[in-house]
Length: 352
Image 1 (cartoon, rainbow, N blue to C red):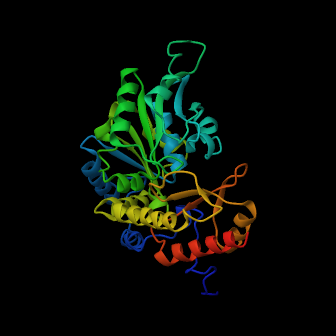
Image 2: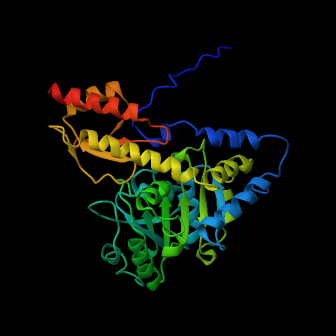
Image 3: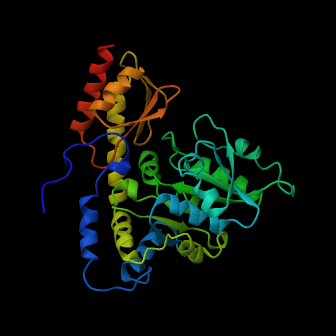
């Protein structure tokens, strides 16, 4: 059996924070949880400790349910928040609408009510367009407003913006879900606590992201308002998101949240995106298309430049029609990674 690595461990790209490895502190936590036997399906001491840690961040009523991935977190959370013939209002660009292969519709049987937005952010005015049919028995009834924090364009809702949306939703008898796959990046950018951006602003249920912030695998559903959900545990099991060895997910999440690892990792990723943005924003032939607030940089390049760059470093084309690309940094992105890639961008643009 060969012991040589199958890939170059020094090679990093900008295709996504999901492509990064596992944070060394998280690997230590997994090894620490590995000895001996523990109760399965969340009855272990690591999951109990995680529950205490989560209440320290999100308030005494918060309860966490570790799941396998972000799509699973969204399906479990939103199924538990909805009843028959009810629907979810979301931005048209929301991950639940365009990037989860119809999981909510197929697995959860959930109707989505997408709203076109210029930047991926909902506003009370935009939500109002989708609540005009409340009470109309011929239409799926809006029940949940779902926000992405940060948005799919890398922008952040402030606590005040979230509060305004929650006040509007609750006033209409609706609930608020947050897809927080990158909530740590938003908190790092805003200098806000996790509580300020969720419980304190009125969010009812949070899908909390870990795998994009240094975990091996694992995200979570965090219930902030217990009255907002029903049968969540049964739903979690029925949609195959209850891990038998939950302790290994919980140990990772607890290491992330018990201290400042979640913030350190996200702040590092944000800082590297900011460094990349500063290095390329003035280059002739390149247009940055969105403000850079978190760990995303969006830009438009000539198609031939994009192709040559992708041969040198991994990243994704975000919009084939416009030529817009997306560069994503991670907790392990280095200054050298950014500077080398920025130099490659400049070189390829200069050859046009």
